[in-house]
Image (cartoon, rainbow, N blue to C red):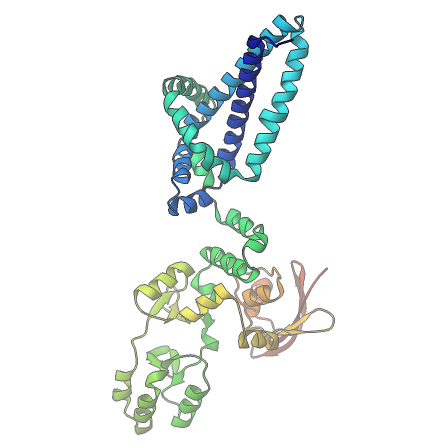
Length: 420
């Protein structure tokens, strides 16, 4: 018996509508889940479909309206056709037809296309962008009307559809989380460097500067032999030159000029070697680290003396110090840290009071407070509210500090242990 042509037509139309519904469902998920950074990279490779998808995402309200209008039209018309089929050919069992249609829509027009789109969102977004772009244009009058009503409702809740474009802006903590979740996509050493760069926006010059007491320089009142030894043994390419103390700066010596400098130094021609020295560059201790790096580059400088708000010299900072903060300690620096922070069998650390809290925290992944004091001497003095006068033991947060030796009111040996 030959089938009724009208029934074939209805079934064909129903299948087409289910496919259309699946397209709208998949394209909605693909568009909303697509990574805009990946789409931008694709658009740079002359992929017009990626550029088209990005343009559609700039107006999410119009895009969603076009998708939802098309999806609802397909589903409602499919429901009407199933009703006609059940009434005319299957004894009016509309309820059974509705149940079957619901299951089919869920499996083939919702779950399956949305799952595919979730797995490959950029691919679905680019491939569907052309049809969606056409539909946005065709449905423009209807979209304008529905969006107008939608905006009125959104105003009641103090919402604006344009705010959806700002959701892609990530703050520092979110970027750190993104780095941590990147897995093998970004090698571990690069993740650490990028994380350090993000953390630098919170750091100031004072956090990483070399304190005045640790600055290696040349005192012109010292003899020629001592000046020679300092130049030969230094690991730095530039050295501060001063008279009596670092507060009385003369200039900065670049080691490439050390031969001429020592010749004049030996002859006692201070006026001549002063011409060899570079002008001293001063920086504020409260300057943000990233800003200071830009200032170094803008002024073609690589080293500066750090001063406080009263103009007193507090330390020294160089471009190398900032780069080390980004890249971390490496090579000989790691060996120096192992010598500075001696690990004992009980898990404690033996060091001296001049050690920087930040370096200790980074070295052992500890969290000793460093908001105010930058060195262990400063932290203990701040906690006691006086200069330590005798060997004693104190507890700060989860850390125990046991002073073992004092030298002229400074801690020369201290043992630090973290509580479990």
